[in-house]
Image (spheres, each protein chain N blue to C red):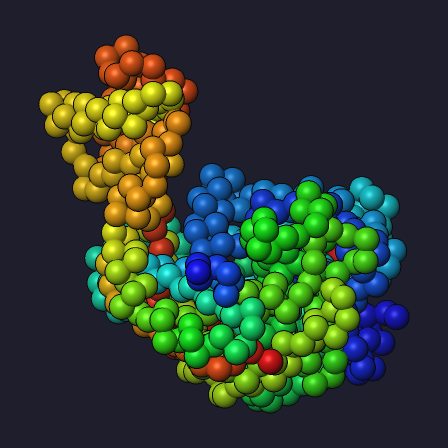
Length: 456
Length: 64
C-alpha cells in the first residue's frame, strides 16, 4: 500500500514496533522487527534528556552533525528490510539537527539503491532564543533562567504528535524529529492511520499508554526485568523488541517476533506501564493529559498481553522545555582492594584521599567517598548489615569549578598505588564537564513546529 | 518473608524524583502490601539516600 493511499484509507489494525529504547541500544532486534514483524511502523526512541545538549555541542563544532551518532549504522541495517516490507520509520534520531539527519538518511538510501523515498525533518523544538528573550523560571529550582545565560547549552520543547502526523499525511516514508515527547512518536502514526481527532482525549490517553509501553523497547519484553529465581527471562542475549498491535479504539496487544528472546507477560507490561510515572492520574503530555488509573492488563495468549482502558482529558496550554546548561566538572578515581582485610584497607584508602584533597587544596562543591560493593548505592546503614565481602572497590568523586581541579581528584586516587594501603590495583580515573538540565513551561503558542521533506 | 516474594518492582526517575512501583503477583495481597509498605517505612529503609518526602499513590488499579 502506498503512503498516499494509506492516508485516505483508515486502517482497522496497525502494527508498530519499537526499534530502540535509547541512543546506544542494540541494532539487530530492530532489523529482526523490520524483517519478521509484519510492521506498518517502526519507531526508534533515542533521545534522553541530556543527549540533545551533547548533540547541540556537536552541531556547533560541525554544522553537518548534531544528529544521533548511530543514525547511519541503524539506517544502513534497517532500511533494506523496511523498504522491502513497506515499514515506515519514525525516530527522534534527528536530535539537534533533524534536517542534516534527513539528508544523511537520503544519501544512505541512494547508496543502498533505494529510490523515491521521502524523508521528513521535523523542526521547531529548538526554543533557546525564545527562552533567552523571555523571563522564565526553572520549575525545579525556581531560579531565573536569565541568571544561567552564559552557561546555557540548549532549550528544546517537547513537541507533540501534530508535525509528525502532518509529515506522514504528506507521504513521508521516514520522519526524523528532534525533541518530541516519547509517546508522541507512537501516537502520531496511530492518529494518522485511524484518523483520530486531536481533541479525542480518551483515545489519545489510551494511545499514550501504547506509546509509553513501547518507548523503552526491550524493557517490556523482559529487559530490565530479569531476577533469577523470581523473574526468569529466556534468551536475553537475543532479546526481541516489542510489537504493538493497535485496534481502531486504541486498545493494544503487546507481543514480539515468535522466535525472538525474552517474554511478554502481565508482569513485564505492568512494570513498564508504571515506569517513570509519578502521577498515574495526570500524566502530562503535549497532546493530552493521560489517566492510567483505569488501565487493564490481560494476558490473552503466551507472549500476547492486551492493554486497554487508558483515558485522558484536555491538553494544557504549555509545553515542557528541557533547558541544558554547563554545571561544572566532575572528577573521579577508582581502585580495588581484595583478600583478607580488604574493607579496612579500602577505608584507609578513602581517609588518605580525603586528607590529600585537603592538603593539596582541591576545591570541590560535592564530594563522595564510596566503597562499591558495600555502600555506594543505598548508603552505609543498609550496606554494612551484610558480611564482609572478599573484595571492594574504592571510588572518590567530586564536583569542581574547573577541569584542572577535577583531574586532581582522580590523581589522588591513582597515587594510592605507591603511597596507600597494601595491594591496591586497577585504578581508573575520569574528569568531565557536567551538563545539567532543568525545565521551563512555555506557552504553547510560542512553539511553532514544522517539517521539511527531503527526497532520496 | 521478603517483599520480593509477594511483589515485583521497577524504579525510574525524572530529575531528583524517584518512583518505585510495587506490583503484587497475587491481587489478594494488595491490601496487605498497602498496610505494610508505608511511606514512613520506605523512607526509613532508604534513609541514607532519600532527602525529601515519600508519598504513596496506592490505588487498586492494573490488578486486573
